[in-house]
Image 1 (cartoon, one colour):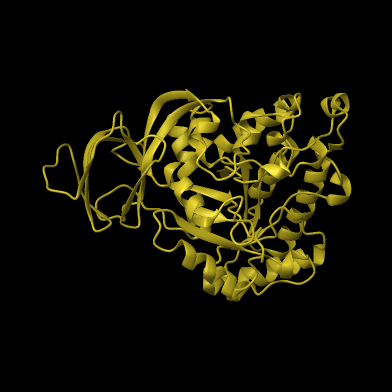
Image 2 (tube, helix red, strand yellow):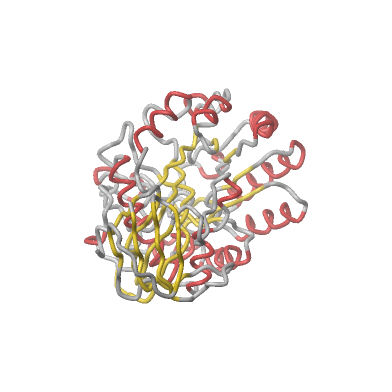
Length: 420
């Protein structure tokens, strides 16, 4: 396929072409020319209003439901939503039924997603049946294509198991994901513990339930070596510990969710179950510190923490609702509303090398993997903007800055179902 992109402003702080407007020619999935003006026949000429272009975007945590919970989201529609939202690569959580804890299950997911514009990288379960007792076949899953290992939003209670997992996985460069929560401290909690939880009559989850787990994990990592990823950090205490660990040279990365950057515990005053998340929304000060840590690189990744939940498990009392919100459709608009454009694009594209994902720059000879967008379009996010099967979105009513036209990847062009 031959594509000709006309008058696109490139956004890449590492490139000499940063914020310069160029034509780009793509042939058979590779960039063959970048010039001020290209006159060439093409299968499709791409021209959009105020077109900007960057490397393809990464999300390190999405859930689609398939297999087992297809009523929430299946892989095909999940990938279509991701492409419409600007993402060329995703890490898929293993919260399925059956779980993703074997070579065959990883292979099945990769086969289901093969040839899509957005590339899917499965996360394998760390333990058999996510039971926390016995390691799954980590190396076999790596051979099938697993990118990392963790029992989605289930903490590793057994310190010895974490030690063994880090020691074993480092022999083949595996990444262990440890959800930062001490269940004995957070049990039955539904929101951040503090004055607001007391006023609402809801059982709280103290921030120490996160920090105490991270402290243990980092102590073990310092002892064993290996590669540790701590997802969804939500407190200032967590930031400080991770910062200190990085100064020691430990191989630790972390992520924060979009929701924890733009929302906080004060947004729960009307008991909106779409804002019931795990970890819970924390204080305004925590949110402020998370933004700063993401900007300075202490936190490596931002994630949509995309978790489709069916209406029967959301339209119930707050205590009984399942935790989770969709977020792929809101990532660019939400981030662009709190960060400058160059920072937003840096956050969405950085860190692929840590995951052994090729970082395809926009330059002649590179594989064409890019996101097309308008950074200046503003709107208020409504339910009509949701492309996911489930509609449990924490960001309805939020101001968004920027829209996505689509993505180019794997020798395909996918145009957004929302804006094209």
